[in-house]
Image (cartoon, rainbow over all chains, first blue to last red; front, side):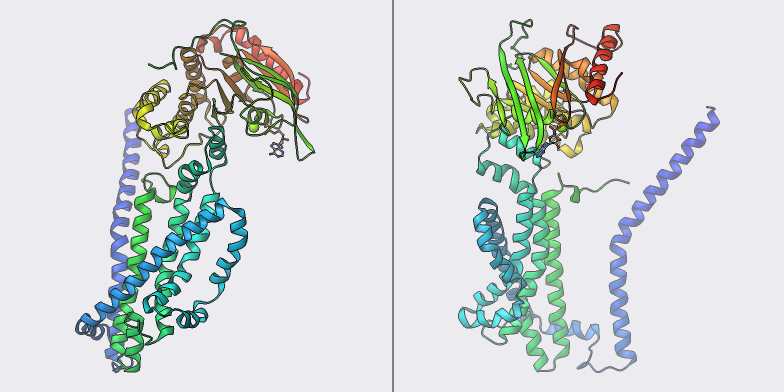
Length: 285
Length: 270
Ligand SMILES: Nc1ncnc2c1ncn2[C@@H]1O[C@H](COP(=O)(O)OP(=O)(O)O)[C@@H](O)[C@H]1O
Ligand SMILES: [Mg+2]
């Protein structure tokens, strides 16, 4: 190989490297910039649509009108936001505890699974709107009613994902645990629960969104039944008063809650898995 | 240093017996004869290879020895057993074809597993773990996670885990089959050095003639349908064996004999 060859080979290598580095830089900027541009464009397009066609605000308010409403109604909407958020997080918490404990029970006892799994499925496939009125008859405590509805919607993905995860242990590792004489408990703690973690976290992402849906739907169904001070109640109330900007403002907040819950579960999942799980590994180049 | 390194390999014939298989039969589902009439004597310090085409019952033999299942007929007696005992259970190390590490645990925590399952604290066995890791050349990687290691390094962790408790017997089921040839030769050399140091007893499953000749003092050639032992070949070459052995006439002679036996097992003539 002559000197000439080698330097040209290096030059090609460098160009390739540089191109890849540039692609990574562009990607890292675009990841933030593109969604932002889309949001800005949507807001501007919306505002243009409203002003150009002279649409009255009681039919479709422009984004800036919605923002004004959000600012003026903030004390009221903030309280509702906290109510909805509290119900959602509590329902998710109960769903996590209930879903995981049931999954462990099903895993440990085949009979428990045979007996209770049909109930879990029935609860899951029956639309919550059709169960909610019954719950409101039998349960008197307002927060508890909404909580139960949200829990019913949210716990199933946690149950089914965790159940699957507990069964998805590496068969060689299972044999190894047998050879070393592991007890049931040791097997659960040191093998099955860690194996189930990625599955559980996947279920948690789905359940987070569902808990919010459950909380909102329950509030819609109860109407003004006492607990009604969450965001769903504000939307209903504003619709009776034809306060469309406030409906949009409340809707916006629900969207923000949904995104926040998703981001929180995704972050949690990343933090817990980044050292070892394939899903959390970012490859270079 | 602990007793990992103190056990010395005595000359053949003076070594205590570890395990005896008597005419073992294993039938699955009442129809598939996975292993038939297998007898084998394992003495302390032996390095025995089970060699044969796939489906000849090599893994079945290991699983029977490991106590993961019971023979349909015949007996597996551990040294010290009074009768139909299970004395060896819990005192063996196993290496599978895959490294079979817990991805959520660091290298040191993976090697700690056998102790953890026996209720020992990490601190109380930290010395043993460090020693096992240094025996396989991974002392610097104690805090790494498995995914940060190459295939060969993961296998070393698996080996460290198998020997950390200083077990009476180590079972290895095609441990290097998934590795490239260069890594495999390196690991073969290292395995022999390790064995020279700690004098462990190994049953090693492989379908490589070269690997079996290089490593073992006895090769059990097996055939399939039904799985059975065809022949037991003794490798007459002193340890330590190194790269020079790989190019020696003695090595060539042995590989030729073993290859012929394997061809017979597969059902062709040489
Ligand atoms: N759990 C099992 N159930 C039914 N058949 C099995 C089982 N394990 C192994 N076998 C059969 O027993 C035979 C020997 O298998 P195995 O011991 O895995 O062979 P090897 O490890 O030598 O490739 C094969 O025919 C295989 O299909
Ligand atoms: Mg096998």
